[in-house]
Image 1 (cartoon, rainbow, N blue to C red):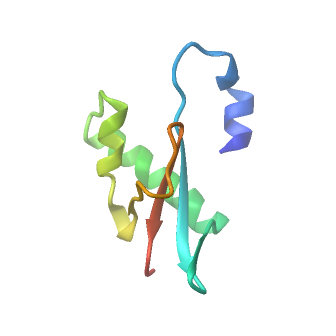
Image 2 (tube, rainbow, N blue to C red; image 1 turned 45 degrees about the vertical axis):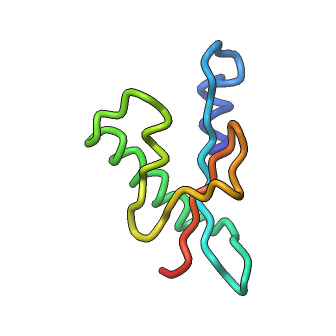
Length: 86
């Protein structure tokens, strides 16, 4: 989250920081729903630990509870994961 990034001072690091966004299809558009996005961030963290992720690119394989990496909506440092149904 933006709050965590600010508290952790991630803007002052020499490492590339990826900001995942989780969006749900609602009324024909992908929208960030804070309750579901927060839950999805936790699921992604669990995925990274269980899979022993070493390369950030491996996070693109995250596919829990219908979320999947959406290359079309993603940018270099902002990765978007979408789901079409809850």
